[in-house]
Amino acid sequence: MEVQPIATIDLDEMVFYAYHGCFKEEQVVGNPFRVNLSLQTDIALPRQSDRIQDALNYVEVYRAVEEEMMQTSHLLEHVGGRIIDRLFKDFPSLLWAKVRVSKMHPPMGGQMQSVSLTLERSKKAGT
Image (cartoon, rainbow, N blue to C red):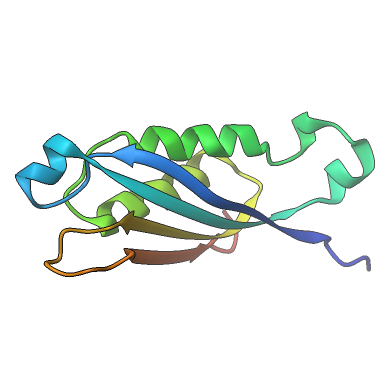
């Protein structure tokens, strides 16, 4: 029996300017955010066909993340959860995903580069 060829695809350091936060000022002024994704998918078909239609399309993944980042939320937990839910909904070939959302220079009363949330999820057996 042949082993299923699984690939990990990383989309690193996607930058978005968004309006997430609990403080009113954050929702008005906004802040830069960075999103990092690691995605695992079966590449048996695209490895043979060399057709984008058979592969996990990175451009479509980026657009899905961008759309979710443009919906204002109070919490990074909410943003990250929406992103990971959307990826599993839109990309049936996805087997596992890890998303890291970082708010750059958060208003915490001190010098800090970022605060981040990391979520990880696997496809349930049979789905």
